[in-house]
Image: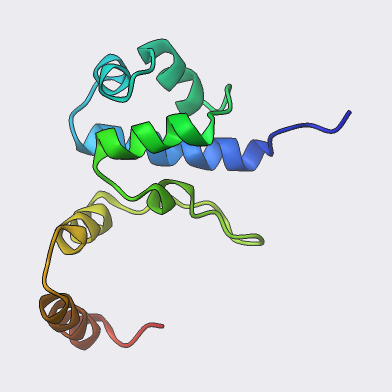
Length: 118
């Protein structure tokens, strides 16, 4: 029988989950309570020991206040890298409810500062 989960995907997801949880100052137990899961299970997912269902992952994303896609963006052939805390803060700032015109302005400022990126 084929393995159901891909280890590097579990590892990446665990790293992302741990980083986001830490940035929000949440313990595994508290994130577990907020998402309807156990703290023990959150720890197992963070260590890449357990797979998590899409439904549970959705509840974790809601508890962390991030889009689900932000947790699971694993692209084939790319190394799984967890963004820095500063990058996460920029994303959180921009992804909050903002007017589209304000988001475009923020992008223009970042491009001017950092150079154009796709």
